[in-house]
Image (cartoon, rainbow, N blue to C red; front, side, top):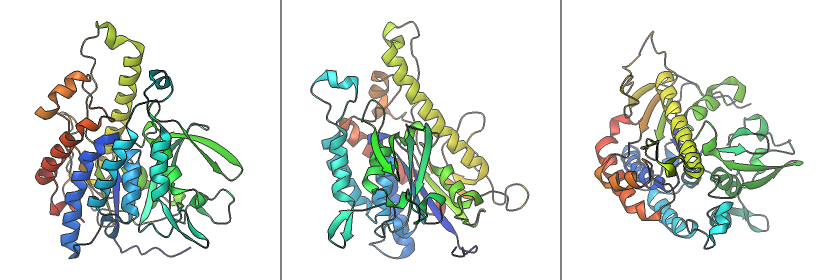
Length: 372
């Protein structure tokens, strides 16, 4: 096993799930990219040049894969807008909505056409172990066949990345595992993936505890059981976590028949659980790491911004920054009212508003002193 340099600072970029709300995230990342370019002194620098690992769940998996591939934010914006226009077109026959609202093949074909590499006989599907990935990539799926979370990572030290295994994860098609991470129930059909002698069905990584993959990424690279063994500590590991905006799911009128109808209850419950899990992962990262910046968790604990060398010496496991916002701006007042306190993840008409909010947030909150 290759010796790990324990003196080198490692950097993780973590990207939440949230559908088209990723257009908010892209504005935040564009500001981060500008600061990275200034720091590196290169106008063509991309985030893969600065971060040693990029982790993503669901829509964050798509963004993360593009970033790990070495794309600029400007290029990803163009690709994402093109994909959004094609992918989020509901079936014309409402009866098909009883299974899934959108055609998974539209998203699959976009990803399959992009993630290719040169092989001995021409272009072929790129895999998780592709040399085209310019930094380590981590993607979260849910194995619906086994009922377990599957965080897959391109680092070769992981147990199931051993090349001698017949079920080596590095041999899985990159487009397919990214598509699987986005297979949100009721939105897209599950993705079937064959690994070794087994075939499993996978659904959206957002229905695992890791819709916000920041903590699982930090644990995977530092805990001995995963065998990567990067150093931990405030000065050795840095985690930047970017959200897709937070909503607060409310039942405005518990006596309203339509709010208590089964489809509405199921939809709100799923959203509330994902939002709660996302915030809990953020909370744990602020407890385990030294938080430099982040929105208020709640009125009791506040932001949990920790001073340098909090506690007994250098006791935190990493330095942590969280960029996210509540959708409480005036632009979303009518949206929140219409959708019961939620900002839908699949409405292209909201893209300009999400971009405008992201631009204002990035200019106000993303600062050079937050980078490591």
